[in-house]
Length: 379
Image 1 (spheres, rainbow, N blue to C red):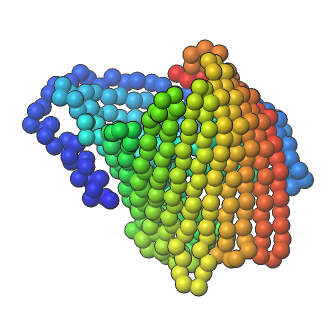
Image 2: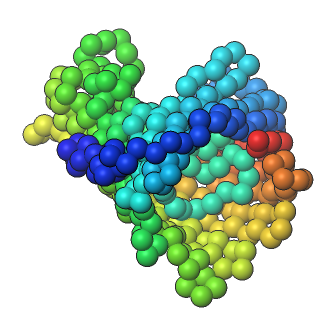
Image 3: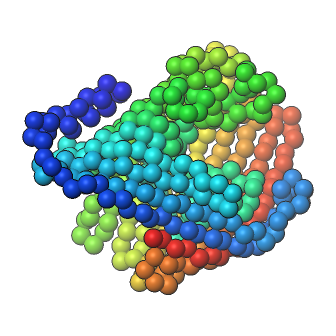
């Protein structure tokens, strides 16, 4: 796939070198959003492991985006995007990439959202908390953000991507990430970090030794209309290779695949999606597996919106042991109102459960809910 992507990048530029054309200087554009939330949080006796909790938290989700683009007379475009996640203490790079775009498509190099995150379709939340990797986790620390898009090992890693032009409603995208030079420690599936035995058990998609590690992904998406109905769908696949498999369980990587669809009509949108993940493992060990699905309905009319969505995830054979499994889900009811262009408010009710079962027979269940509201500005 790396050769394909490099070849595609060359194709995008080829034919334009000879016809050098002057263009206006790149202009800096500044944008982003600032969302601030508050609410009430509570749960059962196992909530937050019984350690107590801030029942009236104030949390934020803030991003600044800087971008610039220039176009040559022959249509070739060059651009750059830098995005920063900020809070009261620091600002961290979220995305940073440059791109070349022509009639043949768009080639990107740098650090950006995974193509699955960008092109995925599924259940919709009209509020600001979102369903995929939900900001409910900002209120409920124990909620491990579920998603039906594919992001583990690929999301916001440095790599090379190609996104095709849209043809008959279809778009194709592919990406290659060399995790050795990605700024992380390489892709890994599960188990104990042999380089640091005191480290906690890792989860599917976490990182350890990075020598020879790489990740590949491809997505096909459709977006079109059939009369009064709008239809969007996508299907994706990703492979994460642990090139050295130096961990104690000799994991060689993991595979993930997903599919999603949404149908809209007269303000209503119904969406659903499914994701399946499976690790590689050596003979004699059970492979860890995970599945996630979401489903939801939303209605938007003018400045108003309301939605009800649900997401469920289950991980089996944790620690390569039959009978060890964890299930997590989230039910999210939201309403939104656009006060004016770029200024929105919302109210959401989220209810989440998490249940862990061990082969020893030990079972723990945590239930928690949040009632949240807030204000968001997009600029």
